[in-house]
Image (cartoon, rainbow, N blue to C red; front, side, top):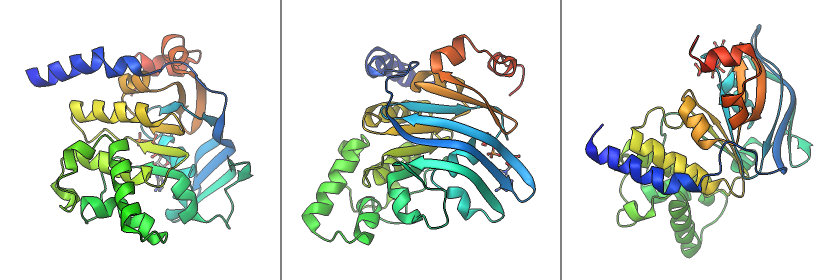
Length: 278
Ligand SMILES: Nc1ncnc2c1ncn2[C@@H]1O[C@H](COP(=O)(O)OP(=O)(O)OP(=O)(O)O)[C@@H](O)[C@H]1O
């Protein structure tokens, strides 16, 4: 790492990171929950009887070794697995007091409320501005002032406004990887989601961009629930309030992040945290 990076990390350590309330639960209000969710890819039973609750104002980390079902579970939360041929999701996913795991659920509307940010930044091949306005326009918003306001609010919310305000009509692909990821978060924020699902959002990013995304998550979680899949144990313990550990398709242990990392109950979790397998 460069001296500049070290300095940045030190600055973040002494300022923004201190503002994060991680490691412990902060809320009883449930935004989304699942009851006995099972996921099958054809005959392969990839996820077993998973029940979890996601709380307003909290970040929940999903951890576990490769192939244990973290992303499969995450994708079930906004019915994204429907896009995968041969994939079947059973069980209840409760959002706003109703089970959304039904054939009649309006996926387009649902994903406004339960947004998703992927591993690789995936901006549209459009300008920075159009990345934000694309979905609102499809929802019928045409007024230029309203759209301009949405662009500014979303980019400010994603801590990107100051960096891009003078080049809103340039291609999103002119941005760095970290900026593209923040643009994708801004695009999601424009829909005012109640829940945001993050699937390894920093794995393609450098340490500075990673910390920027972590700080961003902390700043936008207040009015919503965030769920993050991460392989990075330090990241999980830095950012999350609660953690769920998955192993071979089972959700094995769930609790406040401090308990999970400092006093794991299940031997498999303890072995995982001590690096006996990865
Ligand atoms: N599209 C798919 N088609 C068939 N099987 C799949 C598909 N996606 C995942 N699986 C299988 O489901 C199981 C769980 O995979 P999943 O990607 O959810 O695990 P993960 O914990 O997120 O892994 P990783 O950390 O490597 O991303 C694995 O056995 C995997 O091979």
